Image (cartoon, rainbow, N blue to C red; front, top):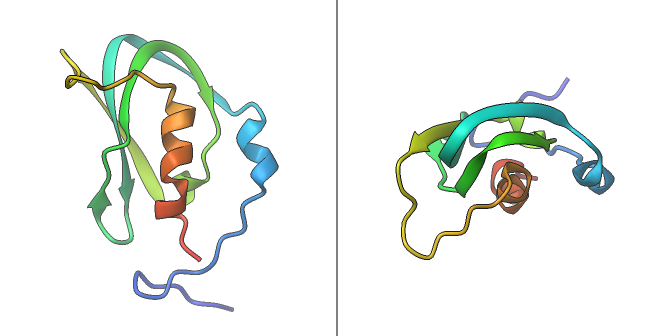
Length: 99
């Protein structure tokens, strides 16, 4: 049995086809949210971007290795686009799932 540690993570196989299949459905209260994936192995917090409230459906492989933290904010920084959580997480999957 393989043993993993933060300095020696195990490779995780991700089926690229699962990114486009329906995932869990979440209903966020109306508003704007800052999305931050947290790598619980390395204790790093990444700024993924901003999303809007309402119903969103996404699947993420990072849940096995991290936490997705959403913080409600009053305003977004200038030039920030509100993107779906699924799109924000796709951008950061390569950081949190290391070979």
